[in-house]
Structures are given as structure tokens and as C-alpha cells.
Image (cartoon, each protein chain N blue to C red):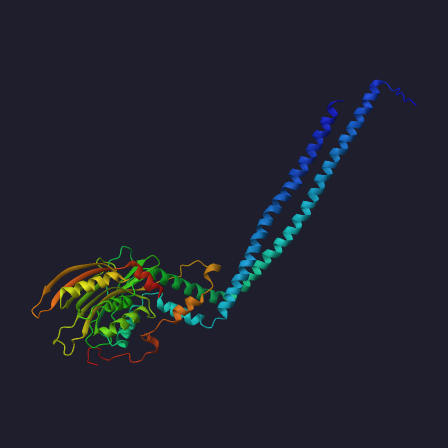
Length: 253
Length: 187
């Protein structure tokens, strides 16, 4: 007689446990996982919507392609040492500086970096170019070191330096040496300075920032920063140039 | 009126137990039914949420497909921002020498002439300046002026000697103030 209630309770418990284990538990588990996936999908939709707005703004920005071209000239994908020499010489010429020598310096690097041999002309006849580019890897950005010797007046020096600082190729001056011209040795060069500059330009072979929503919008500051750079040298555009092919290259030109 | 239960006591107890068991079965049945209802509701909610998830997933896929047409713009933006970040990183240690040289010239007394100036951002002292002037007083004036400048520090007078032309040659060494870098970078 006394065992009857216990039996009833035990059977009830078993039925409830069976319902809980075989019906409710898997359903709750599925609901929980689906809920989490749904929340993630909602966030994804929100992010995609924001991304779409950002990309739509980019699409409507008429300067985007131009700014990209400038950015890729500022820090190109390859060392472009020839273009660098052209740019440096053009900056000097614009500021009445006479370039005597431009060279890409050879430096030992601990990590084997791609190197290139390139002879690069300077615009002056007495130029003695000896260009050996030696890219030096620093994190993701590699350096092309150069040295430049030029002569000019002090009044033009600051604008020459400013030209290098605002050039369309990112150039860092590491050191400079100014020497007053020797009176009487080169005519009226009492105010002429001999300037030696060593510096670096940079290049980066690949884009290293993460492709996410944060990195997609291009701020107006970034756009104006690139648009305010000045291009001094005309790019070397080999396919468009004519005047190649000599019957006797040893003959005077 | 007095009710007298004439059932035998054994039968009485059995009836009481039967009533109690019936109540217990009812309560248990209610519990089971509640659980079954919860199960049915959960199952229904599950199907609703799965449908919503399916819709949301297909919407995500659709949006992603739509965004493919913007890939070229995205590549351009990533390149621009990548270059901008790299340039900002380099600018942190970049010396804007045009401003430094200008500052140096502004702080030079009228009776001082430079013979040579060596500047190196990486090597201490950052500057070695050789020049000539008329007296020691001018050198000290120059040194003090440089020390008070926002761009220079650690100005050291190295040497001076009187030349044949009665001009006093001197050498000064000094460093670039670190905050000058911040000033120049922000400009």
C-alpha cells in the first residue's frame, strides 16, 4: 500500500525526464545555437550595410582613383629607384640647385631582400651616377637609401628641402652636410653651398592592413594629404618614348 | 443527525489511500502535461527561429554578393589607407629639415657666418656647426639663443681660435629637441 505513491512519483519522474531529455533538451540546444547564429547574422547584416554605405561613398568619390595613384607613387610597390633619381633631380632643378651626383647606396642587410642594379642619369652633364639600389626591409616597408650632392644658394636650400618633404615620393632625409663654397675657386660662389644629403625613400610590395570595415572609409584628411603632395619629376614612361636603336652604340651621339 | 460509518476499518483505510493516490496521480499528470506543453512550445519556437536564421543567412549571402561589385573600390581604399598608415608611421621619426634649418638661421646673430654645418638625425650630437664671428660674446649669444630655441638642446661650445684675418672661428655641437619632431610632424 505504501509503495504505491512512490511508484507513481517514480513513473512521473521517469516520464518527465524522458520528455526533458528526448524532446526539450535537443530543442533547447538547437534554439540556443540558432539564436547565437541569428545574432551573428544580424550583426553581419548590420556590418555589411555599413560596409555598403562606406563603399557607396567611395564609389561616389571622384578623387579615389587619383588619390590611389598618388599613394602608390608616394610609397610604390617596387623600389623604383630610377623614378626616385628623376624626382630628386627635378626637385633640385626647380629650386635652382645643381645636382652633381645622385647615388643609391649599397648597404648590408641582415635579411636577403630583392635587389636591383640600375644606372640612373642625372640631368647635368658632369653627373657621375653610380646607382646600386639596395632595398632595406624595415617591417613591411622597405627603404631605398640614396645620397645626393648638389650646389646652390642658402636661400634656395630651405625650399629644396621643403620640396623633398612635400614630394610625391616619400623621402626622409637622414643627414645633411652644408659646406660654404671656397671663394675664388668656382667664380662667384661666395654664397654657394655644397650640400651632401643622405636619405631614404620607401616602398611596400603589398597591402598589409586587414580587410575590415574600419579600414575601408578613406578620411578627407587622408585624401587632402595625398592631393597636397607635389610631383616634380616627369615619370619615365618607356613605352611612350621614342629614340631607341643605334647601329653603332660605340659611336658618338 | 449523526452519520455512522459502518464500513470495516480496513476498507476505510483502503478508500483513504485510494483517494490520496488519485490526487497524486492528478498532480503528476498536470506536471507531465505542463512538460509536454513546454516541449510543444519549444518545438514551435525552434521552427520559428530556424526560419528566421535561414532568412538572415540568405540575406547575408545576398548582401555579400551585392558587395562584390564594389571590390575594386575596396582595393583602392585599402591601398590608400595602407600607404597613409605606413607614411604616418615613418613621419613619427621623420625630421623636417627645412624647418630645422630655418629655425637655425632665425636664431643666428647677425655677426655670425657659417663655414660648415653637419646634421644627422640618428647620430649624437645631431649638429656640428663651424663658423666665424667677431668676438666670443657673439658665440655665447648664439649658444644661448639656440638653447632657448624650441628645436635645439644640449648646445656645447667646442672650440674657438683666432684666424689670420682676425676672425674668430668656432665650433658648436648641439642636438635636436625631440619635441621638435612632434611639432614638425604635425605641421
